[in-house]
Length: 227
Image (cartoon, rainbow, N blue to C red; front, side):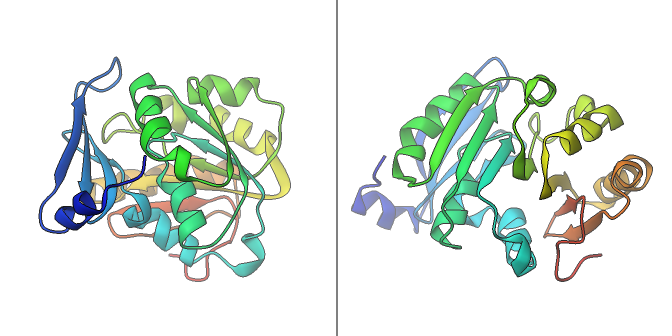
């Protein structure tokens, strides 16, 4: 949905609330206009914030040039569509994306406020991301895992069987970006333990990129500067 000029201007002074709602998966969802951009929040976390979703913005800025030629993307945890938005607006990329989102209310908000303004082909599917990966036979150049229940990653997305299945639907030259929290020392320790105990076991060439309160994990050495 096109943002009105006066709303955009006012949003640089103070957040403008667009809608407050809830769903079966989120007790509280709030869509605001902040600094001219749609921001989707729960009470504990920011789900989407256009090109200000800094963990992915910083990650894409650090990816080696040879890994930026993706055409077919799988996004597990679509949210409001920050990733396709920034790939188009900041990096001038056009692509085909399959977006998996379990929350009907988030799909509705994304379909109303963000997707109509995107030029890339976005195929939104309402599904459980875990089940979808096991049923999918298509191969992808880039798989993005951004699956949170508020500020927690459900355990099923941390098991090695799930990681193995991701590798099965990855194209030979494709790669994975797995978003993890690293906001405080406890978050960092938990994410590093997951990386060392599970992620590296499935992906021996994996790397970590710190991105301001998050860690971005990849199955390959795709980052210019990794940890």
